Length: 210
Ligand SMILES: Cc1cc2nc3c(=O)[nH]c(=O)nc-3n(C[C@H](O)[C@H](O)[C@H](O)COP(=O)(O)O)c2cc1C
Image (cartoon, rainbow, N blue to C red; front, side, top):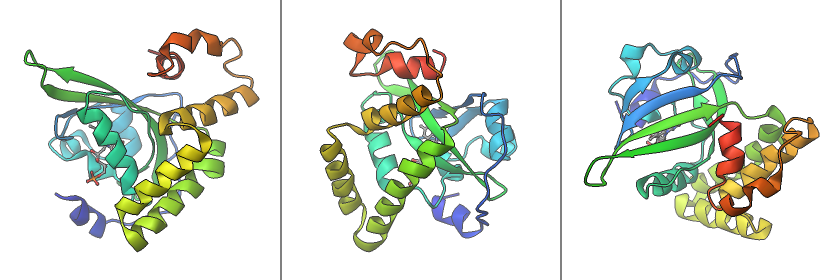
């Protein structure tokens, strides 16, 4: 089943899936993004049965509101063996949506060839989505429709250059500022991340409970 086929037959409902946002959604794919395992949380949230997910490409839950450029950057990182934290809107079987932030682990064989990806996903604060991510993704999608992914990528690069951030640094800051305003992360010390700044292991490690 390719992406076009599954989207053609899909109803899109502008309502969020209700799910327990303290839970971590997990799936494992092969090197090509074909699903080999899904945890119970994933099955519950996306509404597909295990047998409907196994052997399918992970784009079975791709939402049409997602700009292609985000997945382009995500896969460039994964194929290079790098973790990537993306904010993604997903499409449940019911047609409802749910937003997540990603975290990956990459497994290699004895010849150092990537064999599996483990994707962990968590909920994202609604305010971060509504105030920052939805407006950005809407713009990227409009650019893609008008001029293609080449230009949505150029726009994204310009947007991040202006902020002097990478994509991951930008979303880290959005979530961190939100958590701070909610007085969570009260004992989170940014300085702890010093030495680890490039991978953001400190912040995201804490976020994903690693
Ligand atoms: C482990 C893993 C988890 C993924 N999780 C998601 C996800 O939750 N939602 C999603 O739309 N794409 C996810 N992807 C990316 C998809 O493989 C795919 O690139 C994306 O849905 C866009 O579809 P397309 O590449 O056919 O354009 C994941 C990929 C991997 C390797």
